[in-house]
Image: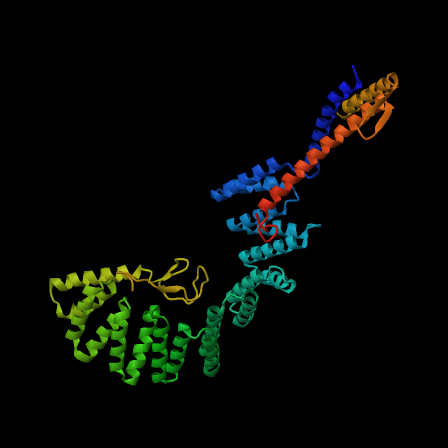
Length: 390
Length: 85
């Protein structure tokens, strides 16, 4: 047999052998146990998406042990622990990541950010503040760190620092944070008002208006400051401007506004203003205010007539209760007893009702808050419009 | 396992030496532009080495191309590695 035949047989065999050897070496060298790792990873992800967090944690823990260099897996695991409320485990995991030698600078800063969030969740605000401040100084994930710092200062009610950091965030991201900053100035004005420092409070309100010219809260505070100083004409102007800025806050604005109208004797202006609101606002508050006004000016009969005509157009439990109260004196005997039961029933019905709801997270509240206790959004809590509410 | 592999390797080396000694005669190849003359054993060995290297090169090229394609598909558009899984 010629040597060429031998070569024709041997060369393909050598080719195949080289091909297998190179492939095996490449897989071994780069640690690409691709299919195994990815199947575990996607299994974990699948559990996560199906809200089966226990199983997801189990898979990710195994994955992290199996491949100790997978930083992303550790980060995802820490995130999961934090979301489940196991903050101590999340802190330990992220601390371990931060102290791991050879970790790239970018990954280390991500781990620091996560650790800061863990501290925040655990209520260790001083530690979280220190970490986020370091990140801002390093200019690493600065927008997220600034957002967390603003949240921390809001929680600590350190409004000056909150304003400073919100402005830095605004400069960095270009997002408009002025409505939030206006609320911070309103908080400062409220503090100053409570301490009797009226001119300081006015300065803060002036700055709030510079941030947000149609800030309802700033108008209301201005009105309150004027009313407390006995300047009821100016208070009326401020309260009317508050209604003009956002009509949704009518139930909050009307009581002090009506008081200022009464103090200045501008009841005609009050009637005109309430009639104007009635056309634009669907709630029961202006109806009740007008009923009270007609009661005092034109007598009880006129008040009741106005209320009954309005209740046909906008049925409301609060309106019904006002009607029962107004007609109670005129009823005697068995009907009066029935009316008393009805009044108790409506009162109990109103007691259990949430009158306000956050337009962002749906949190229900009986009293008005400028900052939602649940989602921490500013000026998002609004009166609920319905038969049993506003 | 490693010992068996070493034994087989030694066996092949001995076989190669024996076959090479028995076929020490020269063989010449006409490669169109030039002619090469070498011992028969060296010809076989050279063919084996070239075939092995070509096989390895093909596998390496195929794998690195596929790896790059996967990376391009999974990496976000700004080129940064996603921070969280």
